[in-house]
Length: 170
Image (cartoon, rainbow, N blue to C red; front, top):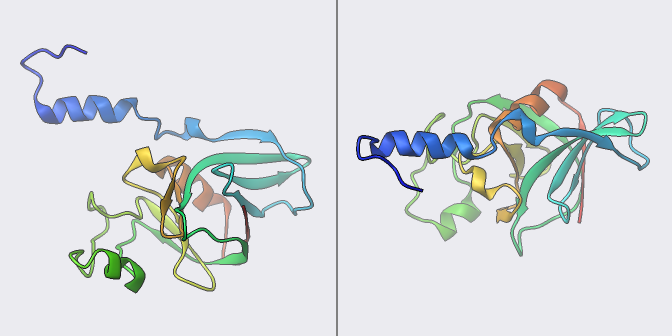
């Protein structure tokens, strides 16, 4: 790609960021089978997909990033917290691997890995959250959290409530 000299680095970055699929177009309604109630969240880590069960054999499918090798998990939990524009306190396991991280990364900071919203999962330090690194969606990249495009996590945030069942399968 040839870029004119008058384009500054920030403008080039903006143009490239616009080309990365962070919009609501990443999600889609698909056929879905399984013995799940409408309103359940099902994460299939092998597919790198999160499904919000709509009922009637349909679900909203979202692409996600999942836990990397050694950090993957499966099981049943539920949403026990919801945060918009959350600040991030790196948990101890992350601080051990990355001791130079600050103790708090403020909401909206470009290095905040939680992105636009987070839904906290009961039973641990895991969440379903947005990301400021859209290139990580589709990969095995996290410490066990489920990452979504920011537009998609905001859509899911509006659909779920406290107590929503979350089932993670491999």
